[in-house]
Length: 312
Image 1: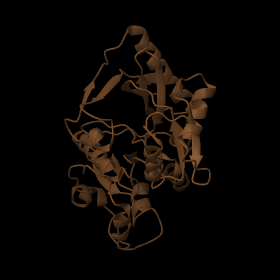
Image 2: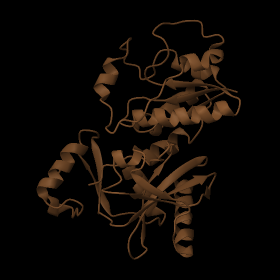
Image 3: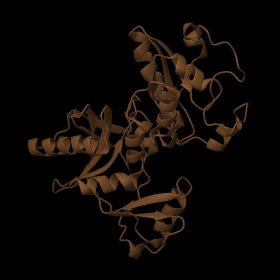
Image 4: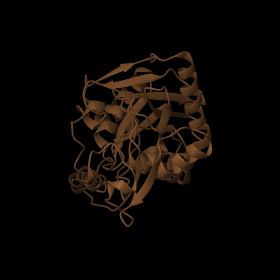
């Protein structure tokens, strides 16, 4: 098969996406497919050209991937580096190359890639792609909306509220946030989070162990426990080799395992994630579990890595 592995883009997880894409491309090539690793934003070439036989030159034109930096990319610099400076999100020749492929493997992470917009565009262009459709992707990506789905279907999740720039409140006592220690830390956390998003979900802090549960076609896989060696499961700990200890299957009581896998399957069902997904959970010292979110395009780096969250 001729396959485009689509990566990059303009999210804070741009570099992580390349690493996922490179590992997926390697596995596909080892199974005899012709694979192009393509940056959805930069595209291929800066001019219109005859793309006949381009999959025979896949290695030549594929993105070359290095190690994941410890900090998120400067997206302003990424935008400025594109030669054509077009306002179009899709880089030169991207749509045409994706239409030429038998299928597009979605290796994108973050806003554009997991929010359903690219999936919707591909539906209109007649491009076949892997993963969830546009609607379920959009629901899963919007944390406030997905949280309402959890609550309506009996899936345990931390208490929380949403906040926009317009409704921002710096008074910590008004919402009972406990992960920050005082009002100054809370204000700083909001300042940082609003650099990335216009709308936030603010949740109660749950002290406990972290787990991820993959689901394929409605069936939960063995549970993975993710234990950072120090600090929180932040960007650095997610993607720097040796920063976390991952145990699979997780060492849990049998009933807790069954319950967590059941809730992961319920998350996939109620949101409509009928291909593959991964749900993230916290488990406190009373064995009470809380679903944090669902990921429609899970990371496939050497260290795994679930979707990056701003914890407030």
